[in-house]
Amino acid sequence: MPLSAFALILLAGVIHASWNIAAKKANGDARFAFQTGVFMMVVWAPLGIALGWNVVPHWGAGQWSLVVASGVLHVFYYVILLRGYRKADLTVVYPLARGSGPLLSSLVALVFLGEHISVTGVAGIAGVVLGVFLIAGGPRLWRGTHDAARRQRVHKGIRYGVATGAFIAAYTVTDSYAVKFLAMSPILVDYFGNIVRVVLLAPAALRDRPATLRLWREQWKYALIVAVISPVSYVLVLYAVQQAPISHVAPAREVSMLFAALIGGHLLREGDRVLRLVGALFIAAGVVALALG
Image 1: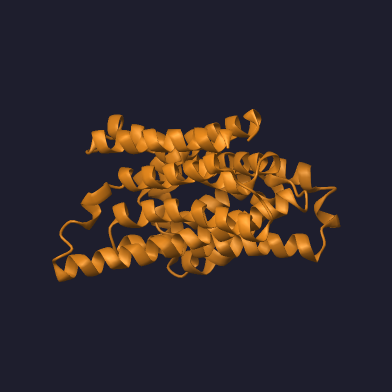
Image 2: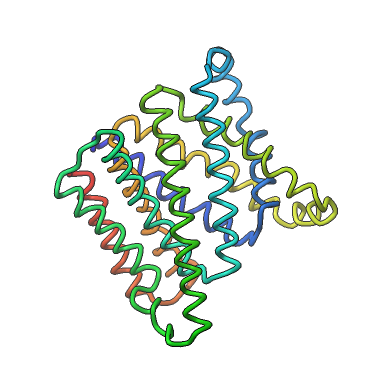
């Protein structure tokens, strides 16, 4: 992995962890996602118009198909993630989603896109996945499964987590193919994909307009933060994909879990600091191995 791609991933990881803190504090649902998408359209419109004015009119069916597919996959990812949070524990769903997503992305890239990876790279992927598992609580996730209700809740969390990870892998491969093989602008892929997301989320937001307006007044600051910085983190990842194999970049993205663990331990004063620190170290080692392998 080139040093420039590695630097982009590290910067994207810091930004990704930061906007997730804002999204967590917002405690929003699909209406929050719609509000964020609308803000993204407005805030990034000057850049989207400037870059796309002479480019987008020349897009063909292939480019537009990928943009629409990206928007649809991102919406499914978000809806399934939120549903998983309602049906199961966040500490099961989120880490499994973040751990299985890059793993599946790497497998698709290796099997179908002709990429290659060394033993060091494989060890790096394993380190990232193990680190995510430890940050989630490690063996503690499986305690108490002798209780039927608890066991059912854990199993639901596993299903929703892996399903979410599958959609993470799907949109990662779709967007990566667009920027790597069709040479599409990462900024335009994300900007126009967001327009698709807004259109798809609009019915859910407009179904109960008074409630949506009330939530918008309560959450607009967090939505604006996410709208301003979250596209930056993902676009940086797409630029990294143009320089390095998808099978390396996708797992390395989980360096954001490292920063999230550190922020959670110090800023939010969350528990299990030792286990999370060990998990963070595994992620760091895995990312370094991916950079070298």
